[in-house]
Image 1 (cartoon, rainbow, N blue to C red):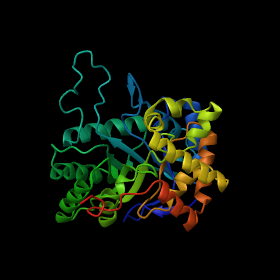
Image 2 (image 1 turned 45 degrees about the vertical axis):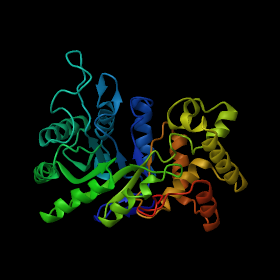
Image 3 (image 1 turned 135 degrees about the horizontal axis):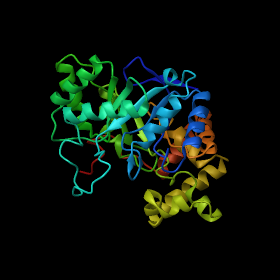
Length: 337
């Protein structure tokens, strides 16, 4: 396994991040445990989850599954850098409410941060969270309040680092400028949508993360299967999940996107390379990227992701990939004048 530091911290994390969003919803407890065992055996030490992951009526189920795996012992918890996220409404029964969350049961108020941490610790069966991440930007809560809440949790030993997910570049800058003025470490990571087919993060998010020393953790590295051999699976009749739902469905319905995916798969076929593995290897080659989040549903998916770590992409191939999926470049040059 290859390791790197998480942003400007001294924390060593694997270059692949085990995403657990499927645990409990698409992957049962036994298979989820087996996947975590296999990941740890392969040296993957960075596990990512969120308090909201689960199923209807059991939000938090994913954290409970991870907690039950930790409870099996064998040094599992000590070997894992554990990251979870909070923001969304965790209310299980809304029969008494409207579609909106009960006041103070979501977003990033100090009250909800405290509530969410305590609940996650209980579900995960641990006394601390290594990287505590804010799942979405909350424009109504000032970062002075957020950092005060983080300070308390760090002092209590309940979290070690703070990170973000789905934050715009200016909020990353704002958060860390406020932190710096008060002598705090600030944010150490940002999870963002970033892959070959969706490169807008290169405009402002990745540059902001690099400027302030945050590790970039891309989610949806295969763009919900679009970059995982979607057209081949469509021909083989094995891509129902890929071609009927999510970004892949919308993408393949667009002739221009479909043509790009076809060119991508044709290029890699010439080199006898797997599309999904190349998509991960490409992200691993990008400046500022700590490691992509992979969300295996089966052991075979995990093994394919692990093979990407050993894949070296030539400059010629990288150039050809840029021609198919050109990035926008950084701002302001990326904008049309």
